[in-house]
Picture 1: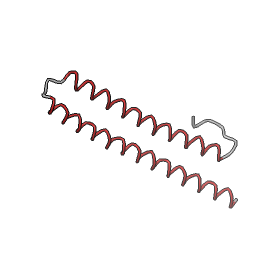
Picture 2: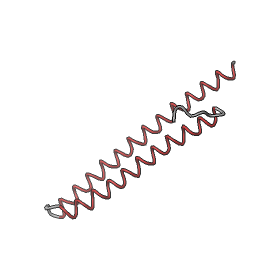
Picture 3: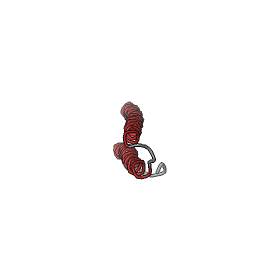
Picture 4: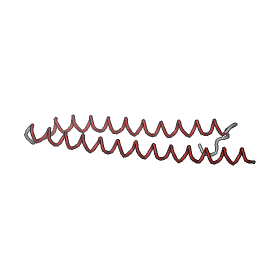
Length: 96
């Protein structure tokens, strides 16, 4: 998509924001689906007692939430960098 032609820097910035948002939402959906599948498979296939199984599920859920936080934080950092880059470009265009 980097070779795409935009008619304004605003359109380019909007497209960039949409790509970052799509990546963040995709990561979140993937984490949720993975967590659900993990829980279902763990409960169905576990040779452990139910208390141990649920403890393992709680640990896995905690790890998943932490991974989601990390992915969200990374997406926000990327978005902030893109906004800063756009601001610098606009300031340069205004000065020129």
